[in-house]
Image (cartoon, rainbow, N blue to C red; front, top):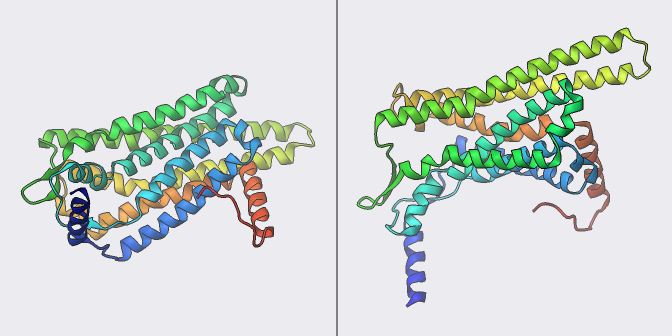
Length: 325
């Protein structure tokens, strides 16, 4: 009997399975997913196999960022959908977890929060170098990363309750219950997941750049043989901070403002499936590919470790290479 049910379930799944409609958006999305998986997996692998990298709070936040981005990259890989969703546990799970993309949005929020704390961590390291080791110890950094994921889940838990299964039509649908609740959710998400992180990152990066310029002027006025190297390092940090915040704002602003407009009722429901909004979503996903480049490759220690890893892989021709996957 169990065997017959399994075969029947497979037949039903195959009957109602809709293949992926490949268009420009899904092709670009797949390319971004592959690039994000490769780039972030290299960052994670190098961190796990380079002991010197594990002692830095900055590197721990970079790896936490890479973990969030690699989950996002995996989740944006296009998968077939169902034209008819059965009224069972699997059907309700499909609507509340798969269709809602809750795992992807949790990882996206974790990535945004990781970027925010990385900017704050850099500011403390520059402004308060003595208190820095105590404020960002190993235990404290791990605690912050765990709390980032807890809050990321908490802020997206509402999607489980607004995504439902219509047992008559066999289709998933979204119901916020009231227009007021949808507007509240839309504004809350915009403020917590975008506006506050952008303000904190801008404030932290601007203050960090100001402090670095002041320190650079002090080093320039004093006769110190190490000044050129210190100045170069500070300029590199300034460029990295600027590139990170600019790329984040460029990638995420269109999607966030468009989704806010939808929740406020300023655009119709069909707008979410139009070419413009789909382009905004793809642009937001591109940030997961840029993060390992902007943070890991501009970090001298990470860049050196990655070069060593790639060199070892290139010389071991014909030998198996241990990777994350």
